[in-house]
Length: 319
Image: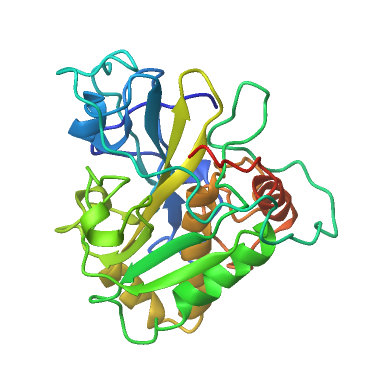
């Protein structure tokens, strides 16, 4: 999917439960919110990006959303396109956005190498691709730093995020580096470069245990959302530089009270991390990136093959 566009806070719509495979029971069916994209505009109604304020005249940045995981029978969230963004490279007031110096921690070769999946599978789709057809991903030649706001994390969730990250790191070869705890709250207008908070480089991936009050995109049945921001120069290739993942702490608290709650919550986090890394939904119900989580068995062959390809994108010393 090339250059997906903006979405406002998604309204909720109902859909007959018969269109989906049952998971758990009718009171606890889990669905992934379906995102509708436009070719113009930017993600999460970010006013800084919507106006393209601060972008260098030859650069563009776009937030590529994953889709939110919802709960409740037949509940599906749809995104709506905002008004078209200004033309890339033509800021509204002529200013240029501050961007970090290029190549922070970038090496000449990938820092890790995922083992090729044991079983071949084409049951994966990418959220965004470049002109050559290759997927948009994070540079494998630099660490992907992340921070966690665990102030609202439920009891029993202490290792869920770390375990999920280890799984995705092994599947991609991407080296994740924890920068520890943060008090940063999720924002629909999160800046990808926050020098005062994080230093002179792209902001780390933000993983936040939160609530619909703090993160309105979690209102209704949505239990988690995730996505990343890609950056490019002119018509050149795009690469993700940062992202965010929001987890509905109250809903996951309820899940953890079930017998298989820990495995189910892990599946939710893995699914959203899949979106952060660049995976879209698939129509194969055997994959974790299918728009419903039934039996939380973890990453399947299609998920693993997609993540493997995302770990093989080009290095980007220019970003």
